[in-house]
Image (cartoon, rainbow, N blue to C red; front, side, top):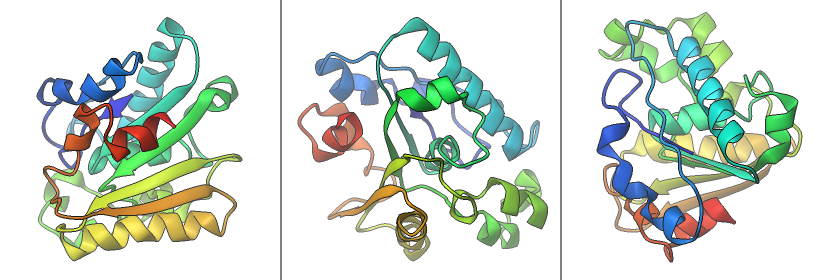
Length: 202
């Protein structure tokens, strides 16, 4: 399952279908859910929507489930393995790997940006919806992947979740891919032999 970015307030799944290429070439089915955007809903409601979408996909296809997402999508897939996940115990048991690509794992800094005019994140929501401020579920496995050419805040957010969750019992990895920026760091998903695809499919 690939969850798109756009800071919870832009884009939809139609922009990203080519990124299914790597997993499809290796024999996997791929789902790319869209979701209702802010300010029509709050981030917590998007978390619930993504959980429901994963549940629907799981009804259609048997076997292990791998989750990945980019930027805001990285936040959303990380939330799926936080202790307040909307996923059922049966779904959690099927999760093999999660890869958060340039994920936003701590929402608090966004409160001080112009984006918050649309997102309306307050302290309570930041504490409730930031994976870095939540415990991982038992058995959580996550790779935090970021481009070496990204802004310092994305590099910080990437290292942050891997470091915190390692201390809380999750199996974590942190990867900084050289010569990649925020908008091409996801391109590896289109290639069945790329290390990013391999990290996802395990």
